[in-house]
Image (cartoon, rainbow over all chains, first blue to last red; front, side, top):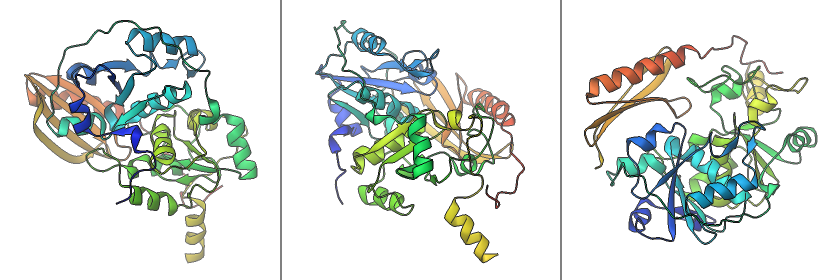
Length: 293
Length: 79
């Protein structure tokens, strides 16, 4: 079995357990709902709230550089700390935090393969103890927005087809049957997808225990939809966290160089006035249905 | 402490397939409801009693799922 393109960005649960007392490693749990951490977490792990600490709720943006520096400083992280992120829902927001740490140039950030789910399933140690670390004077780099797609990039991709759009939401969201994942708030006026996007739900990249599928399986998964890394790739979902997960897979596990995460995602495109959308199944399938009919 | 005494069930709830997973951490019973379509945990509850944790999680999941509307256009037609 081939190794992932950049295996350094992924750690196993065994590795994490071996480094629980390693002062150069900081475990950070980032959940969809913060009560998961309170129910029990990996010993030594701290929690970040994606809403309160990793989002600028006024601008609807990633946190600014000074807030990022403050967050890492108060959680005892220095530039040479190995940050290992994990969380619930197969690392949805852990991947989103990973993306932000990469934007601000943290040298060594990794994901725990399988996240909280795998750690619990394997019966590994949990605690209620909340660690406190000495403050640091963290200094971040200027944000690297080459990892991020903004609306004009996506508009250009639709117009010029210079990039492949990968919609990682559920098939029902892609077709427009529903406006948001079942049970989660509806945040768009319309259902459907960005014209030309390929539907490759994030969950297809995960095994039942939450870990990532093998290099070969992932390569085939995306290749079957024409995504082979020979042109830029833009991932999107509803608010940008599931697409961070798939961005991670494409960029670091498969090693495709030019992959960006469109965190504006469907809550931006689906609400845009006069922006074109497609509904129903993906275009080639639609053509096949038409021919069969 | 560890997560133990796992129980998993999959069934329909308000027209959606959900997975109810319950387990114990220390003296606390945890129940989570995942919407299978999205892979997202949409409700989580804890209690001293497993039945109560599951009941509360399912009630919360039901409320959330009831707010999910399905559109009624023909999915075979694009545009």
